Structure formats: structure tokens, C-alpha cells
Image 1 (tube, rainbow, N blue to C red):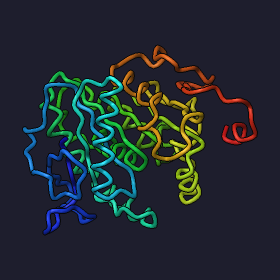
Image 2 (image 1 turned 60 degrees about the vertical axis):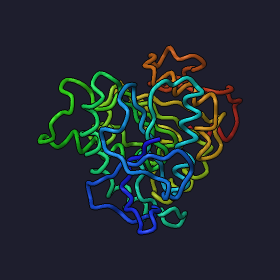
Image 3 (image 1 turned 90 degrees about the vertical axis):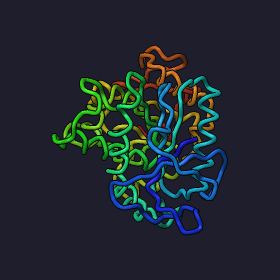
Image 4 (image 1 turned 180 degrees about the vertical axis):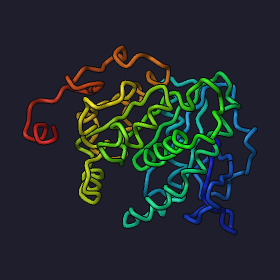
Length: 300
């Protein structure tokens, strides 16, 4: 599996939280969980372009070994669910510690232009193939900031004229403001650069419950958009609250992965099997129907 990294390689060939110069990245290939010693450096042209591509972006509190474990596992699971494209991972230098939440925000922000530079260089190589991105947690912050910068900076040439830079943008447990998709916000600009956004959320996510308190702001991956009626027309959200009760449970939940694969196939949002409408704009639910409860009322 290929990894695009903004982590500076240590003298012993491992990867920690040291950063490469701003805007720079390196490409490696790995076939097993590793601290980095097994990673073989590769060139941009080595990344396969024969099929649609899915890029993964992790969240906070992940060291390199944890990232490789998660990405290799995701690759297996999304293929088992029916995705027939290639999968690569993008990794930024998370401190890998719970108490470094705000340190990781600084690290992920520093990696924004490296990710954008990679996309601008790689997207033309795919030609007519599709480029998808799936983020987890704080990874949504990185992707939104990168696409918003791309939208704002007129001097950046389109990598493929008359075509969106990303086809399917998908979020698991997005650790970003629940107002970020509203007009004038970075998320609104980001959605304008993709074919479709699908954001999966659960109000039972304990990590985002803490993040909401720490940030003094609701989280998109916790309760969904603050005002769904203001969602852009190409932004959809999926309530997974009867399926997901932990922050990293999405990729290990079959119903979620099955839904994700249908999104990556380009299936219309209102035609994906086992979804049901919630009554809110562009918002569906998957999993067992939830009985009325005080908890359910509290999160609405």
C-alpha cells in the first residue's frame, strides 16, 4: 500500500511527529504494520492510476504504526465490501498522544498545503478515473482547509479543466464545527470543489462529545449540521447513531462500509439501499430504527 507522508523520517528510518518542510511530502510503500523501517520510498509516478483512487486521511492521536495498521485494515475492509479501486493513505505528523489535541490541530494545519500540492500533482495522472477521499475525525479539518484554499487562490490552475478535483468526499466522525458547511464557511467552499460530500455522524461518539466541550462548539460528526436546511445541495449526512458508539467504530461496522462503497460507486444519495429519510434536508439514517428516548430527544 502507498502512503503519502508529511512526517520527517528519523535517522533510524522510523517516523514520529517531526515535520517535513511546509508544503512538502514524500511517498512510501508498505505491506505490513510498521513504525517505518520497512517503508520503501517511491515516486509520484509509482502510484497506480489504472483504477479509481480512494485516499484516506487519519485523525488526531495516531502514531505512524497505528496509522499503518488502520489504513491496511481499511483497505481490506473496503475491498471486502465491494470497492474495486486503489487505496492510498495520507499521513500527517500527529503527536499520537491524547493530551496533544491542540498540538495536533497545529500539526494538521501545517500539513494542509502539502496535501493540496500532492492532489494538484497527482490528480492529472488519474485522467478519467475518479478520485475519492475519506477522512476520520480531525482529517476532515485538513481536507476542508486544503479544498477551501484551492477554491480561494485564483492563481492555482485546475489540475483537470472542467472537472472537480475530488469526486466523493466522505467524512467519518468529522471533528469540525457543525456550522462549517454553511455559506461563507470553509466547508461550503470545499463542497463546491467536489462532486458530493457524505458525512457520517453519531451522537453517541464520546470523543466528539469531549471535543464539543473543549472547542465550545458543536461537532459535525456528533449531531450533524447545526442547521441542516443550510446544507449545500451536494452535501449529505448519514446518522449512524444506532450503529456507532465509539469514535473509531465506523470502519469496522459493515453497514457503514456497505453504504460507503455505494457512495464511491456514485449511487444517488436517495437510492442507496437501507437508508431511510429523517425529515431533515439531505439527511438519512442507517442501522436499526431508534426508539424514542430522552437521549434521542436531547441530541436533536
